[in-house]
Length: 218
Ligand code: 3PG
Image (cartoon, rainbow, N blue to C red):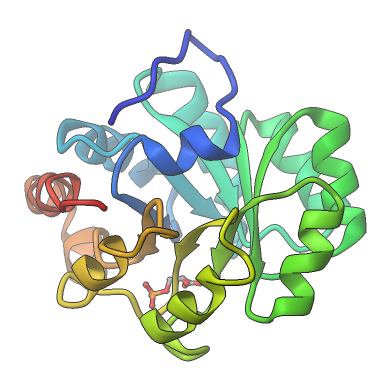
């Protein structure tokens, strides 16, 4: 269900998860691709975009998308430090995703009122994130760390937590994750295949986004 956000308004973590069934995990190597890619994903119905801080141009890409694609809600992925959080927010990121959790990252996001989906793979990490007020979490790396069976096991003790499994999620197994009551959405890189990105095949990316946007959720 698409959430209602004003221009430039920051979503809550739950809104980031609820907007569409899939959050695309994006790696950009060329600033020129940022805007056409964001437009292609939005055209397919996916507007919460996680641009990972894995390349030199990532922050510039976030800035361009934030400025030029108002229909998109761009966030920063692979946030690994408070400095990453601050740089992402300065660039215009409206949410953050981290591959793990530290209190310092949690504090930095709280201070900037920036929604954070912290990555967790164990019960202790869930407790640490919850202690700091984070209850919408990324399960990472989802397939490698136990897949749907792990989420079923967590549903007992952590029934109040909503997860976004990411890592090894594909069009083939996304439905199995999305059928779980504690999964709000999934994350994955399959919406931006390397060959489509290299060719600038935005129509294909819109098609992949449209298919992802139609995936049923529990
Ligand atoms: C990542 O960190 O690259 C994400 O978890 C995406 O993983 P995927 O490529 O398996 O979808």
